[in-house]
Image (cartoon, rainbow over all chains, first blue to last red; front, side):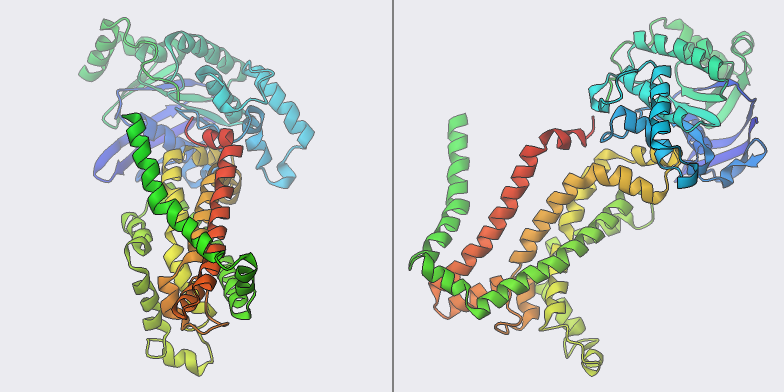
Length: 255
Length: 269
């Protein structure tokens, strides 16, 4: 069940977002797509989620032509940068959505759905908040609702776009440790986008460093840190380590 | 300073909005309420009221459906000619209603493109209900779309994308995610569209033919009465028309007040 991305390219109008990206994600791995803004990492993630389609290249998941599967049939749990929670639904309704829209014969009973929602809310430590609306939650709580909603569909793969981007520094640290632990428990193949090097190295098994629509280097955090393969990677790593407090709380206010 | 500005605003609104409206009601009741009611109960007046309500009942739902479809297409998808379509939606706002009416006469009238053929098949569009409905639809087309496009642009596409990744079909996404988010905007659009549909004069005047008791809508009936020097009668029908508009706007305000929390929640949180 590994994910194989081969020579994927994508342009928006004239601007090339991806320039032939190839990499393989082994089953159950936790992979970070790391790079500066505009490096194409979000576009790559959206292609994997079925929200964007490449102009060239192929993606195979478990030997399945992944690009031929529409987003709604991929069962790829996607967590958006700003969570994209359904604002008119309660937390419980948000989490239940993916189960309620299933075709009748695959849909669990109302009781079963309620039970699963309870279970997921407990998993993301939001027990008892099912009746709240997203606007009544903190950023960290919304983030976890989005995660519970994505997990509800029993995803085959989890895709997270800047999962901690809109949170303050303290919550970021807590949440990423928690996410890593969750990953260990569920064993779900997970790919997340970040521009924060420290975050990528702290959580991921494998890091893909992206620049200008290409993967400059792909490997374990140790390998990448020990032997940067290109001047860009070396510089990128240096830059980040040179500024110990590179991000301050509130730089990205919660929406 | 604030007092002065408020005074100017209130004075302006009073002079240009409240005073004329009050005059309409005062003039209507000059010969007593009974007389005003009698004018409204005349067969021609009743026919005009029926025609106006029927026209609105056809034109408004159609425009609501088209308005939602157009807004959905423009805000949730990228395609060639999108900017052009957006401009096109505004066309009825910038074209004089008289011209809008004339367009239909030129297309469907006896001397128009399809005139002879329609006559041969016994179909009447101009000087009949279909023409009036078409002209009304043209003039009131932008109201729903204009209300929804900014709202839907502001809300973005992410919730729809999220729904897709969670396995929802296009239909499910529309009815469970998009529709609940736009229902208030849609309702405003429909109410404004309705107010204008009932009040439209220019475009309808051109295509109606002014056949009393048959193709006269309420605004046209007001004009007929006025030209016949039946001032009180004219003002009585006008009062009724104004009343319909006031009821519509009051209803809108009531909804805004009653569901303020929910309306705030459907905007970006």
